[in-house]
Length: 487
Image (cartoon, rainbow, N blue to C red):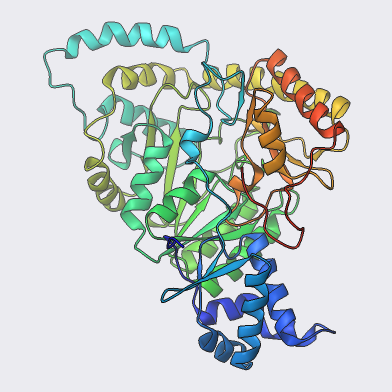
């Protein structure tokens, strides 16, 4: 068996998550089955992620105050049912969810795919063409220069700083690093502050690219369940997870989170920011969807505005409001933190395209119009998607989001996202499996449906899904007590 590139969970941490009091209070059945059931629950929910190395039997038995034989029996039961596996000389690991392509390669090329619904990225803003026209004229004055701007063009950094100042966050150009999109920005921040073995708190479900990046850097994501209808509980859960796991970083999307659509109200985001600061957790705030409100509600104070500047690093991008092909993102941070992040980024990227930056300067100068145009188009697409989903997939349940770019749907009993996605692919419809938005085996009963395509394409996609659902798309051919494989 090939060895896994895994992170480990300590015996005290796993015991805390299992909860000795939970074991004592559960009635019926032998103790080893109670331990196995609790561990399986943690794996299913993503609290213990796939490919995590579990503690040795003796260490866990001490932390749980049970016999080693009891823990060995629990491990054996989970091995026999496929949840974990043992590697000689290496340890015991949570079984992988399957052979998965990278998140970036999952969608393929929208130009060649029939119906590509993996990425929730919209078509280009109608304002983009004129912006490139202006940029093409302005760039002529720079042809005699080297063409590199390591931190970003000053005029773009100042335009981004003005954007934050208008939102009530004191910012200068020295607080801004321009990157080639939000993913590069997130990578630069994580690569700067994620040491091997580090724990990163994430909302659950979350953006799959972050889970991949954390794992590639040798870290481990600590998932915190988020309910868009009960965001106060998220603060309580995040506080508890921080005390149990001692993360050094947190990654949150407080505005129209991907994929849940959750938005933290003012009081909640202030409490969450203060909680992370109290625990000395540096919070990475992903704001790529912050300007995607579809209901005309007033802007909410940016996350971290009420806490010291050193407690928060903010990620922004033009990818959702303008176009993913305009590769302009940024990091906004306190100057000392930004210096460290910029040093990391310089090893990856010499400069972002100058013509893209000049186009972004033009667009930032009329950003209110950019937001309005995007909101109008997205609102029409969202409402159309909701209407056809309710008509053709009445058993699929979802909350209508006030913003963002997708619906996060609960699937009917008996339908797994991983199986549904495989079947849809054979019909020319590309989707991201619900599993990709979690850290373990969670969310195979959910499906994300972006409303970023043309209305006819949305109708065609829903028609395909309705046909598969009515035909009774089978669950994976594996017993319900075992983990589902991902196709």
